Length: 614
Ligand code: AGP
Image (cartoon, rainbow, N blue to C red; front, top):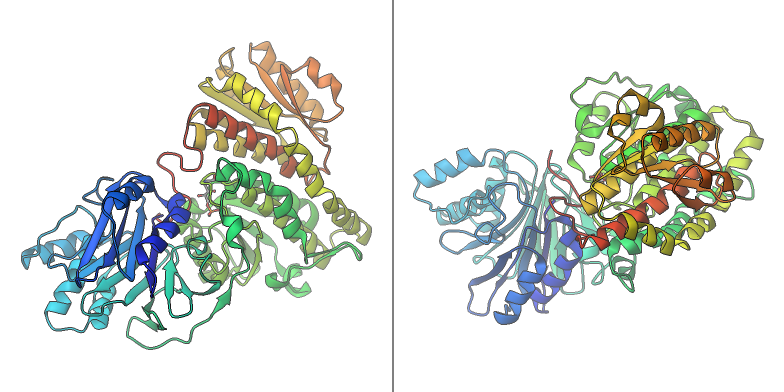
């Protein structure tokens, strides 16, 4: 959840770290801070509650200098989000400083032990036990690296830390324990970087190493060493990242979310590139490691994910069952562990995750793998844990997604599931060659269709101007558009704080219809498909109860204007691809509502982009 950045090298560390933190603020914005080793050989810290802008102001009035430093943006777990609990945390005698992401589950017990030894604590955080323990070990005579390792071995829970000590000036130690979010090491020329996510350091280097569970690293300006917690050196696996730094910046857009919505035609193109053979009507997913034997053997699929990725899975189920004929169950990753899913070696589990580091999704994935399932994933963050633990994966190609509300990763993951359904059905022989060719041909028009929806942005803004004061919304859809109703409602909730429910339209009469009156607008996804007539009847039912209806309808459907109060027209898309198009106006509607309400679109309250705690 929290964001971490570190630097060691000839340049001024605070400026580089602040810049990196700006790219990570989506991970947490309760407080922020930077520590640097100053010329006088002491650590200096600047930190403040609230957003990064507060820290930036503080740094202007009270600058910080140094060639090694660490920084942090916080999503509070232990201790209030105030200045006292902001990271970095300094040890009692000022010899060690730390930034941390995760939860030290045994911190109470460790804190009691330290207090009994006379250590006084300056914060309410679980983090502080780590830095005090390292200092205690150093003062008892251990060398810094050993002190860090000794400390790490005693921590329970999922944690990522970066530590600096006066005994080893201009050096950084970092470690990853469990699934508290990754640490990417950036290898520069005579300088080293680290961060919890790639965009923070991408402008400096593309050569990166990702720490695995229970690995630590030691960085100096000119060297790096990866090791286990016993100090055994581990050969590095260096990746070259293809993302460009420009795509991680806001550019001409007011918000990252807006930029990312508008990037969707491009991210769809990137998703298709190299995977879809339009000439021969085939799909290639090399990283999935699919074989005809495996594809035919799988007789059950679980899709597991959280939030928006879960809704993507709900729509993906239609694609996979319809084409590949594999019975598919979609489960919340946060529940997966607790209901004893029936898994054997013929079961596949598909995890969908933008960040690749959502703790619940990783836990579900690890459990599935341990129980013998074939683990697949659709992941955006390259090199993330989810990608690394999977037997096969599809890299999303959405590019960096910074806005906390997920948009382009949603549509990209839908395209990926469509590709997976095509590849599986080809290998399983569940559809004809002709049908496969048609499915592949249909993809060619997708980027253009998405672009055509975006052209109508002004209309969605106008609609948002009319509805931004409303307190409740109901979103309805059927079939493959039911998950789109849920995703549309989630987008509105997250960024505008308006209560919204996404419902399968046919369920309305079993309860939610009681909510409908003139204060409760209904957004009904009623594009032309085999459920169109049924959606029209649902719209009529809502209208009969005094509801105001906004319909998402297919271009050319003049008749629907007689049923609904407002119509959002979208271009006609093939049925399995329609959700990708239908969700875009809902994303933009939510965006404009949030802007009109003056909400913080990219950093909605209480949320963080990567949820690395259970
Ligand atoms: C999306 O708008 C949300 N912020 C959230 O629901 C998100 O989709 C969820 O936390 C899952 O994240 P992941 O895809 O990175 O695993």
